[in-house]
Length: 134
Ligand code: NI
Image (cartoon, rainbow, N blue to C red):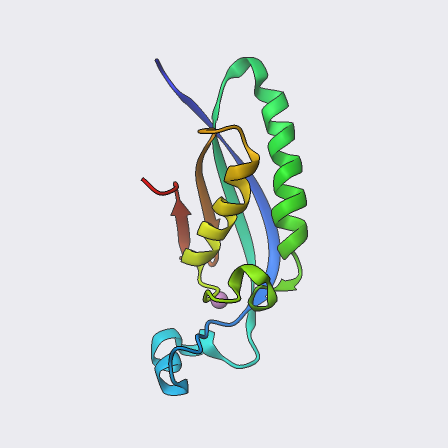
């Protein structure tokens, strides 16, 4: 059976600082460079959420997805400092971790098996994606 996927795009702006208390200041700088700047910096994040779609109920699932992403991801992170979010209390706010956090927020809220992939564009050249544990 063929499988159709649909991707919706969302946006939020947030600040962060790449830093981990597990490393010394020098090691943090070596690992993260200017992204370790103590004052932090911001990104215009783009979140791409891909779900398995069926034509018949397309509008219903997309309306549901828009509402869920807006309420649980965009309103949570937009114009916030990601380092202050509880999801990152023990995680560095890298794009790799952010995309997994967003998957973890959305996957339990959608029908089982519906979420296919989450992507996060952090900068012009950095894109992260996660499709769940396999
Ligand atoms: Ni950054």
